[in-house]
Image (cartoon, rainbow, N blue to C red; front, top):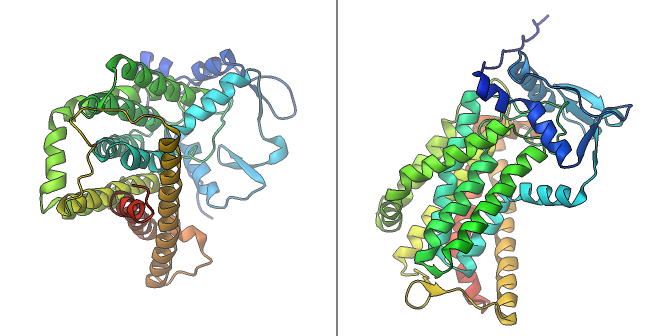
Length: 409
């Protein structure tokens, strides 16, 4: 009989940091915003303060991930145990305006949002800005994901908090990569756009602060991060931008002109995917990180190929150019480009994913019915990297040529 896995103690934080990591701080914020936890079989709200530095959180997290390997549609997981849906903790949202606002804001920080929406800048505004955003986004997301699995600080438990998301609940919490990505994307755009398009810096600063703040606050409202997670995410993202900012133009020149650019991009990013920190349980962080690195690798190859083919596709006129006028024709053309482009990206993803999984299952002699096999490193890393590298190439190299064929350029 196998011995039970003993819970691992969480890292002990200094008093100021422990206070910021306290889940009760998150629960109080949720209640101030009108979100209340209803315990199963009763109407009471969440329990009182709990010390986030207590023992057992990491052990519970590992148990939860092991249980998730046998996930079922009619069960929900709480601290590694299957619970009937009827006894699942419920919540009451008394302020639906804030509820909808924060749920939408949380969506602005998801990888899927960036993969679908960053290309719009490439297709409709300026490929230079999209390239800059993809590079910075990849850097901060990789650093954030690695730090999560090195520091291994747990997310706020429920109770006392209300958890509105479940997919990433098996991941560790610090730093918040939503906060990192939102900070990096908005402020990179603020720093890079004025040299390309005519915008008011004050307006851009207001938008950057507003959007990044909404995403950060949404991580507290959804119960997915502590205050410490969010603050560390913002600070780390800011430090990475501060350190790398003097080299942005140098890297851009190398990425576009060096004959080593495509080879080094694919090799380095694939190596980072395979050397991602190992955990004692399955987590979505490795797969999500490989997805981001794959997108960056594919985009890098496409950007370099465009430069070699002479397709710079910069805005017409003397920089900075005026923002495009929002005429009916421009809006219709932009929507058409988006629909065609996203269809191409989704189609590429589906085809390459199916082919790569089929090839890997055959290579490793894995039955196709074994859905859990795609969580294993030898299959997850190559299939996700190849799939999303193809998506990146299609986005940066082929979609604009499709626009020309369709008369949408």
